[in-house]
Every structure is written in structure tokens, then in C-alpha cells.
Length: 94
Image (cartoon, rainbow, N blue to C red):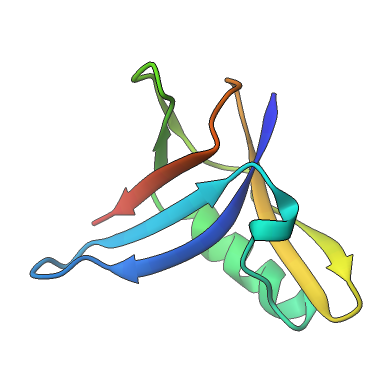
């Protein structure tokens, strides 16, 4: 199992779809300034059909988003994925 950290997100141009980006390095993760804000987003992410794809093309529906403290006032969000070797991925939600 590998931790897939949320590294960013953006609205897809010309569509009502939000793209989420993931990485395997905690230092590259997006961060929230409070645990509470990060935990609130974890609940939101868990209620979305966010998927991530491995380099081999396997797809996994992300869930169980969790918060960890990276540094004082820096909280990062991740989920566990069942494959290794993913440095970066993209998830979408309608």
C-alpha cells in the first residue's frame, strides 16, 4: 500500500469537473493550516467518486482520506492506494 497525498486541485476548463492531483511525497503535498480544515476536506473527499490511475492503467476509487501533521500548522491529506510506483495521478469528480 502507498500513501497518495493530495498535491492540488483545479476545475477542468469548459466542464463542471474538478481534477484532483496526487503524489507519493509528503513534502510535495498541499497543506491546510489547521487540522480541522483538513479533516473537513477529508469528509468531503470521502463523499466524492475520486479515482486515481496507476501507470499500468489500474483504477482505484479513493476513500478513507486521513490527515497527518507535516510541520507546525501544516496538515496534509492522503489516502492509501493498493499499488506502488505512482508518483503522480489525477482524480476527477463530476
